[in-house]
Image (cartoon, rainbow, N blue to C red; front, side, top):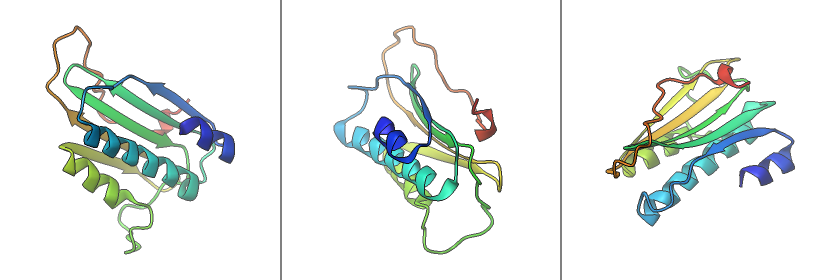
Length: 140
């Protein structure tokens, strides 16, 4: 999906994708896919970004999905009332699958959508990739 969007829009997307196959039930995997799809669509439709990134990181007990752009950002204090950017839907979808969505944005500073979902995993020596807050200005 990411490659196709990048090719059709001209927005370069950097990706870092760990496998999460088998970590969650199929319905949770589908919800994560839909969250990524909506966030990527927001980058394309609303951000005026010149670059973006998609990360899917699997830690020992957590999966983190991050979609960030260097676009125009948004003013969180202003609500257009119609949910046009899909951010409330992302937050609700994350909640329904036991996760948390954190959306960071400011006018002129891009937007970062991070979704974290904990799971009971085996102790396989993978380190936890939880890295706290990320800013879209960190896009190289």
